[in-house]
Image (cartoon, rainbow, N blue to C red; front, side, top):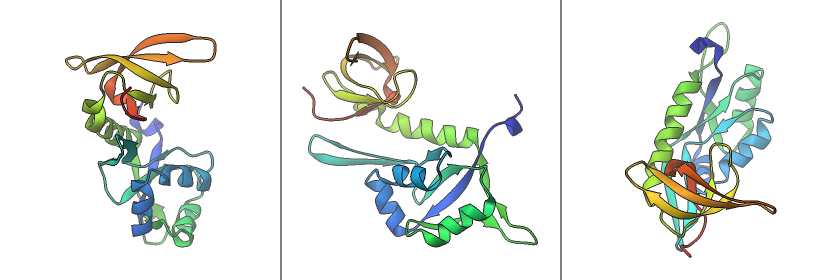
Length: 177
């Protein structure tokens, strides 16, 4: 597959209010509602753990939304939203949005994931953020720091399963048991 066949992402510059919303972990949901049907990546990860707020970010002040809508829509959202300062673009005879490749966004996402992978510990309740079990919750049974993996007990209504997952795919959800 040629890199040109992949998705591209529009770069959104956040306002101060947008940065605060990202730091609270609420910007992604807001942008998903605005850009219905487009994937969104906010390079911030915020969660509560052991009675404290934890924030990781790899690109402060920016967010990304999958391209594919009319370019003027991205600009109009930036004008109307208190959370977005600008949809990066070039000015000239034609409006051209500044975009980045899927690979760039995936690299940022991987970098963000690696930042908090070290915090995964035995007994921790976690949410799975990637892979087949994405969106499910479980408990960490063991951690292999050398491999960067954890064994997680994932419970569904009619099924309990232990899965080995990369630590970077897990987010702590509450205090250790």
